[in-house]
Length: 113
Length: 110
Image (cartoon, rainbow over all chains, first blue to last red; front, side, top):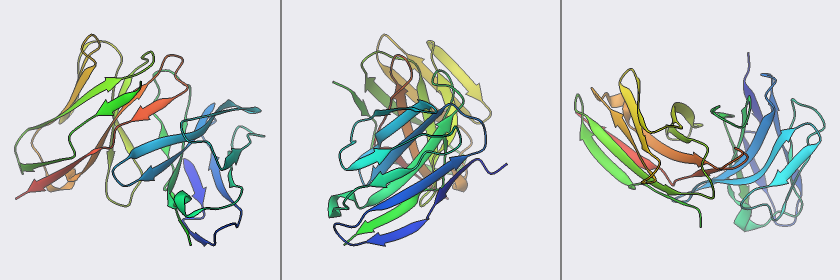
């Protein structure tokens, strides 16, 4: 049972480049989310999904797109990378939205030059 | 507004007890979570409270007062491996969004 798998683990981009961070879970969880973690600021919600075909914005959605075509996968796309998007990105999932803890992937460490 | 406050750092001695406090303001409330995060790793779930009172799980306990918007995490019999960041997180009504505090870095010294 792999849990939540994120790829890549590390990535360096140049300003203006685009890329997709992959996230997959094998626990049949309905709810999936993307966070970014910056020093001193805690985890901030970027986008979330409550099921296949349903996504919505979190606290800091600008510059990011998501889609949820299957229950298992929830990729995060950076449209045009900016240095302000340098961060550690975590994908998380939970069985339902209420009363269930989130299971986190190992994170993607992204640097934008 | 929505906000979670917790101390930035705490230091405690191996074998002792430490209490990490958290105050929260959210648009609606649907549960309070505590996560542990070791440096360079992902957060892992420790405890969950949705009703007032104390939840105990081994060496870890968590308390919630909804009327005061207050929670604490109690760690007993501290071990060196407990040195980590502890994240307080509140879920809003409907459970779609979770707000995280910046975390409390706990240093356990011998």
